[in-house]
Amino acid sequence: MKLSAIIKRAGVSELDASDATVTGFAIDHRKVAPGTVFGAFRGAKFNAEDFIPAAIEAGAVAIVARTEAAVEGALHIASDEPRKTFAQLAAQFFTPVPQTIVAVTGTNGKTSTAEMTRQIWRMCGERAASIGTLGVTTPDGSVSTGLTTPDIVTFLSNMSGLAREGVSHVAYEASSHGLSQFRNEGLSVTAGAFTNFSRDHLDYHGTMDEYFAAKMRLFGEVVDEGAPAVIYRGGDDSDWTCRAIEHASARQLQVLTVGEQGEFLRLAAREVTQLGQTLTVEHDGQTRIVKLPLIGAYQAANALVSAGLALATGADTAMVFDAIGRLQPVRGRLERAVIAASGAPVYVDYAHTPDALEAAIIALRPHVDEANGGKLVVVFGAGGDRDTGKRAPMGEVASRTADRVIVTDDNPRGENAAEIRAQVLSGAGENASEIGGRQDAIAAAIAQAGPNDIILIAGKGHEEGQIIGSGETMRVLPFNDVQVARECAAGVVS
Ligand SMILES: Nc1ncnc2c1ncn2[C@@H]1O[C@H](COP(=O)(O)OP(=O)(O)OP(=O)(O)O)[C@@H](O)[C@H]1O
Ligand SMILES: [Mg+2]
Image (cartoon, rainbow, N blue to C red; front, side, top):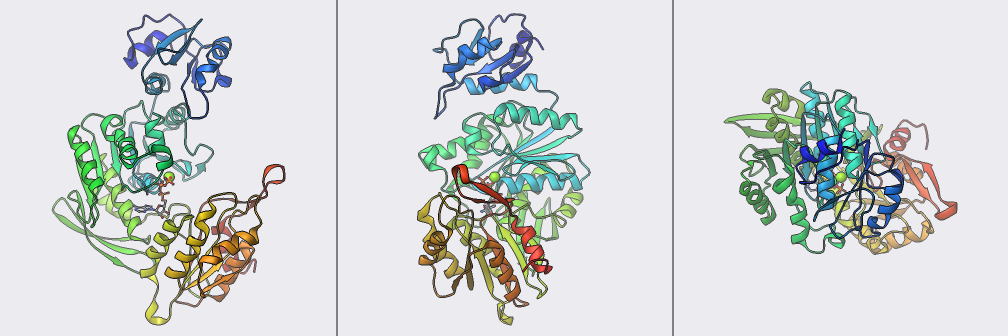
């Protein structure tokens, strides 16, 4: 494709470009080949403007950078927002893209909502994919990992790769980092969704207002003009939700609220069952009752946002409600791994902070049959070489909210596993015990569980390995909580 055509279509510059042919886009100078457009951005760690000469040496035909950057020997596409301009240019090159693309933002629930949206579309007969922290999930449900926070080039090339495989619908996770760095845009986004907002990532964004503003770029700039904006409104509506609605309204988006206080999809009632929940939902003047096979109030919230996105992008109403009743768990998010021989269900969740651990336990609590002696048992540990301050609070939260606590190993990394366990235990009470090996701990919890108990294995979620050691001695042992739980329940290991 000619550089002049790309610049014209992106409408980013009045430059009279040369007739050079563009062969690719790169933000890493080591990936520059003859014909590449190179994006030179100033990041927190290094300044890619330093690599402009190397990129030109390697054959870059154009450099997207600040006006102040020194560019000699290639076209300088100058911009106050080089990342944004680069995204707009690259999007002209990576074509075709799926027809229907939706983006999900919010503090929690992005991955889950994107993945549930994929599942609903699929059950409505569409070829759909999702992109998020878990990787790219394709229509057959297979996941390719390795691009958890894709850069703009990976993101756009993934999109066109999916389109070439016949994928027509994609739901992606728009994180605040991705939004503030223009990493997931440039193409037409049919609809956007906002799940919720709370304290997180302030180390990066500085203040809550800046963090929120980053998220609001989704409604303010990324989605198409007049696009549907699906916004979750729970029972305890926060100011942030109202502000999100204001942002979307200010750009004349089609605001569709879902949840207890939603107007588009109103959650009129939610009743907990042993392995799921029954939702009474009002939509378009009709009341529908649907049995969601997932537990936890927040999974119902995510399912409603996903249903809102599917409906907003033209899916059939009856099929969408039917699909909610057949949603599969998102990997490592309150995922039921197995039901033990005793009858106790075993859940895996990647909660690895005190707050998340408490949220997961609270989500499970209503499902415990306490009247018949049911107990909630939690198995978890804390990772090594990371935030030591959270260890005792995790022990405290687990002890306070669960009935029995088994403290075990997470990813010890370079630390002594027994010392990490001791730190977790220092915050825990008398209902806590210690079992070192993670497999032994899971096996013990399953072997000891009564018929009305529920077991939660927290901390590692979808992870496939256990990291032991650091530096040269680091090893990753194959370990997946879901698989280990199944093997323990089947008596394969004990
Ligand atoms: N709607 C929700 N409201 C509150 N908490 C939620 C919600 N959805 C998920 N969570 C919590 O957040 C955890 C992560 O969920 P998920 O991976 O879907 O979120 P995410 O926004 O993609 O997170 P990340 O920013 O880490 O990628 C869940 O295990 C659960 O504890
Ligand atoms: Mg995520």
